[in-house]
Length: 181
Image (cartoon, rainbow, N blue to C red; front, side, top):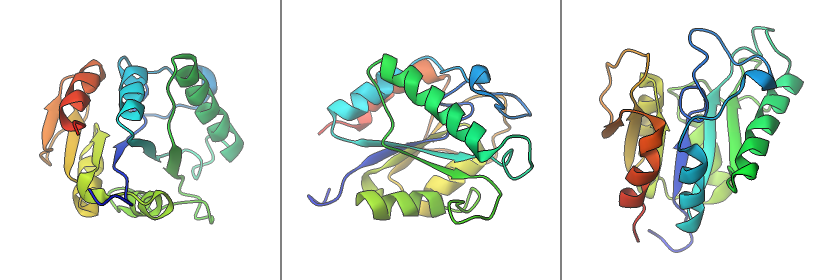
């Protein structure tokens, strides 16, 4: 790893950080529930002097199902739940489908990862993504990340990941292996 660059673990949100809403979206802060292992994973990442960044598709904003303010409240709830557990994310990048200046390209386009890499001086060759959908894995591959981690869930798998975990509770132990110095 180049000394001036940092490594990062990118996280998809729905289905990884929080319980999957199924076919729909998380439409209120009260509907957001953290998945097991996430707070522990973030504490471990912090101990290893690594960044943790959310890259998420939230087209529900562009579809008019929720407002940008509601999305912010959902993320505030996420951060509050994590801070209670002594954990946090360094940033959140979202594709909302609004086309505004804060909107990022949709997955699998690696634009969210590239924007984070530029802002935080991230070494993509030493970074990973954790997702539950093909588009997350494709995004990580397109960005040139060191590896991709799939959480097996409800979605069909057509794109192989570097590693596959059965559930989010397995993330901390896996990170202990890949984030060694």
